[in-house]
Length: 72
Image (cartoon, rainbow, N blue to C red; front, top):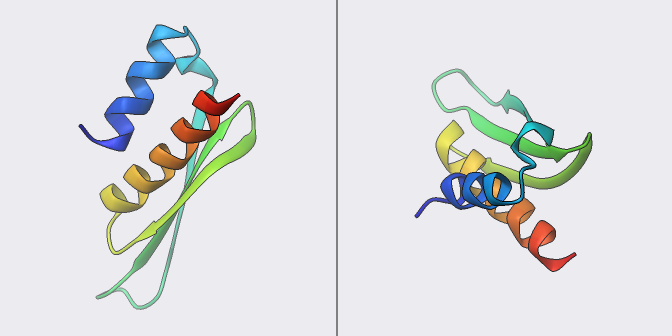
């Protein structure tokens, strides 16, 4: 299961899915961008992912956010 799916499942179970937002940025040349995606919960960055495509960066950010949320 992807990090995004796991995070969504957790947030739905805890009725908090409406509290998450995403921010995405790219850098580097157009033919080889590097994506940075942040997962925010109530405006606080809980996870940041960096990767060669949006999907891998978002998955990494979601996994970081989920670890944080499960540890509180």
